[in-house]
Length: 196
Image 1 (cartoon, rainbow, N blue to C red):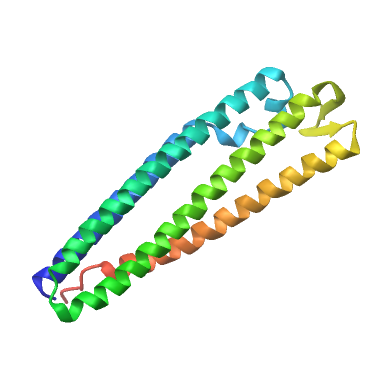
Image 2: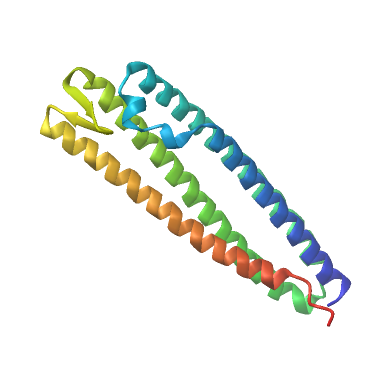
C-alpha cells in the first residue's frame, strides 16, 4: 500500500469516527427526551401529560431537523475531503477507489435519508395519536394501560396509528441491522493489515 492509499484510509477512518460521534450525540440527546414514556396511557391520561408529550414531540422534531442539517453538511464536506484524497492516488487506482467510494456514500446518504423520513413520519403519527386522545378526552377511558374510545371509528383510527408506528419501528430496526452489518464489514475492510 502506497502513501496516498494510506492517506485515503486515514481520511476514511477519521470520517467514520466523526459520523459515529455525531450518531452518538444524537442518540444521547434523544434519550434525554424520555421517548419510551411519550405515548403511554399513564402519560396521555391527563391533559398535562398529553401537553408534555406534544412538547416533547416538538423538541424531537427540532432535534431531528438539526441533526439532518448537520449530517447534510457533513456528507458534503466528507465527499470533498475524500475526493481530494482520492485525487492523490496513482491514476490506475483512482477510478477503483472513486467507484467504491461513490457507491458507499450513496448507500449511506440513502440510508440516512430513510432514517430521517421514518423519524418524521413517527413524530407526525405520534402527534396524531396525542391529538386524537385530546380531542376525545371526554369520551374515552384509560384502563389497564389501554385507551378505550366510545366510538368504533376512533378505536379503529387509534389502532391504525399504533400499527403505523409499529411498522415504522420495524423498518428502523431492519435498517439499523443492515447498516450495522455494512459498517462492520466496512470497518473490517478498512482495518490495517496485521503485521504477523
